Length: 111
Length: 115
Image 1 (tube, each protein chain N blue to C red):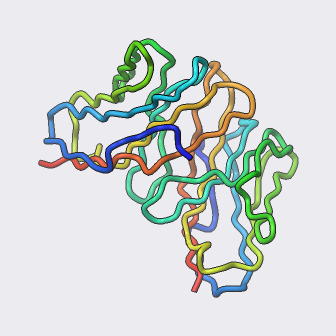
Image 2 (tube, rainbow over the protein chains, first blue to last red; image 1 turned 180 degrees about the vertical axis):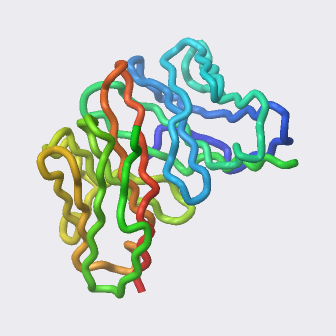
């Protein structure tokens, strides 16, 4: 079973920030939070990952709470092309790590 | 760099027939994954290879599914015989541990329809 809980769907207006929450209350100390997204008819695409510090790259920002039990993926200026299913995953970075995808959050960006 | 290649992109078969999918990972990636994605669900890991050895196949239905990774590069996933519930997209992904983290690169998938 997935170790994360995400809302089923969310809407966002084009040009506004999209904030996608994820709960991972059973995360262990050496597990990372990864985010992937899947645009219709494509394979999932890596977005960002983090351990405990906030992270930012050219695609998004990842905010992890101090207790690491939840996180938020932020798309600062959502575009129509960001409409996709977003998956939050917790996993180890080494060894025989297993990636378990939940159902994800379906984000609809509207014009 | 070239991405993960998969073929065929689409396949339609009748139940009890056999089918095989092929995956060519990104050059140099030691780890290769096969996922099954049923419509409306997230991908489910079927099998994970590290080079040509199996790391995890706990969710592979071994009575009908088999996979191999020849020489630690290309991989083939086979279903024999197929059932209606095998209709899904089969995704291949690869990764390396360069940089100390595990970003998986996914191919476009093979959409299988079992009639």
